[in-house]
Each structure stands twice: as C-alpha cells, then as structure tokens.
Length: 220
Image (tube, rainbow, N blue to C red; front, side, top):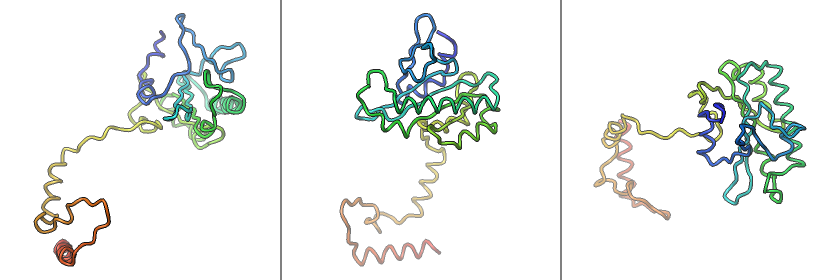
C-alpha cells in the first residue's frame, strides 16, 4: 500500500461517517465504478486521491467529496483548469450517472452538496487561483487545505466541513463559577430563578419585587 494512501488526513473522513468510493487493489492500483470520474480507459485519474460519500439517516446519499492532491508543483493556471474540468465531470455524473449499488436512489440531495477538496502546500492553498476558485460555487464548492507531513495543518482543520474541535473546559472555569455565585442572588432569596419550568410560569408580586431589588443592587 502506498505511503500516500496511509496519510493521516484520511482519518477525519472515516471518523465522520464518510464512505470511500475508490478501492485499492492488491497490486497497488485504484479502481472506481463511477464512469464519469474515470479516464476513457477506465483508470482513476492520478490527481484524484479519494471520493467520499455521506448518506443521511435514511440511507440516501446527501454529500459527495472529491479529494485531489495538488501538492507537487501545480501552477495557478493548471489549478483553475483542473477545477473547471472536474466541474464538468461532476455535472455529467449528477445528470446521467449513478452510484454503484445505488442506481435506484435519488441523487437530488447531491446536487447541492458536492465539494472538491484540494490537498496542497501552504503556499498554494493561499494563492490567487485558490482564493478565486473557493469563491466560485459553479457546480461544486472548492476548498484548498494545507497538508504537512501527511496531515491537515492545525490552522486548516476548522475549514473542513465536518470537523469540530472537542470542547475543553477552561482552567479558569472554577474561578469564574465562584465569581458568578457571588453575583447571583442566593437560592433562599430568589429560588424562582433556579427552578426549571416546562410550562408558562406566573411569578408572584413578591418574586418580581425581589428581582427588581437584586437588579438595582447589581447596577450599583
């Protein structure tokens, strides 16, 4: 198996439920059963690293991501040509093609959720051609992602459409909670503010007066 096939950037797709559509054969060659995305001889184009499919809870295809590798010396005019050529292929697929084993399923949702993700170096990802193509929404959206040592750079991780940083608790949270507890009124004084209500609640005149008094003191 090639080194590129084992690169770390692939894990983000697998972790988010995307299904690989390109198969790696024992001899190291790639196979793909989507005619519109293959060359005339049936070979997977060299620049096409992967195709990922996402289905919704009903099993209907709803998102298609085509991943290209342009890290090796692609010029700006070549990048534009690549994006436009693949837009034509994508349009042909959406109009006339079908997914393997899903010939009877609707591809309506895919028409609005096809993206070209272009793996590049940090310079190419910020070049004029990349910025221009990212603004274009013709047929498919384009996203240029910087890769270093086989993985997405930390600055570009948040650009991935499905990537979310895990929430971490700030080290100052206990101090903030302590300060907040000093500001809020005590439960014994305004218990009505701490109770959960599932229906509309009518507060008593006494409760409202206590809230107004607390707000007045807070302003001071």
